[in-house]
Length: 141
Ligand SMILES: CC(C)(COP(=O)(O)OP(=O)(O)OC[C@H]1O[C@@H](n2cnc3c(N)ncnc32)[C@H](O)[C@@H]1OP(=O)(O)O)[C@@H](O)C(=O)NCCC(=O)NCCS
Image 1 (cartoon, rainbow, N blue to C red):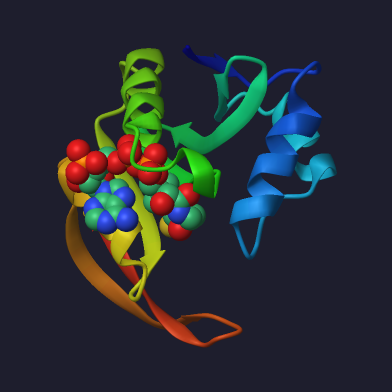
Image 2 (cartoon, protein in one colour):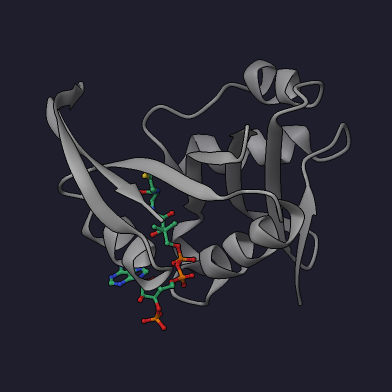
């Protein structure tokens, strides 16, 4: 069964491990732990049984919610876990009026996810990413 909870002292290491397995520029466990005292942060961890499989981090300031990172372990993809984390996030942030994120231009899976959630492209930041250098697409909702 899928459960989605806020990141906390008990699951912060598992959360960081999920991010490390999926993301090139994953937050370290120290950076994840710092978020526990960041009043603007909402980071969610998805569990299948006892295994952490998904990670979603967002900072919401003055009604603007910025997605920092989202990922799901490769063996658990296309089962609706990312969508379920976004649904939970929206539930926890009822005051968010606008949503923004950036994504590598070549990341077709993530772009498809964001489009399926109602995000649309709003602009491009040239050469925003490194190793490899790539444009970022800014998407908003
Ligand atoms: C992007 C990512 C988070 C999607 O997670 P997921 O749990 O597999 O996504 P979901 O199952 O909730 O997908 C919801 C919808 O998004 C779209 N989608 C997701 N992955 C897709 C893919 N690989 N190809 C096409 N559409 C996709 C589909 O519309 C999907 O609905 P459907 O399965 O009913 O067709 C996952 O692929 C991932 O962790 N990628 C590596 C990390 C990453 O790139 N993160 C984004 C950084 S900006």
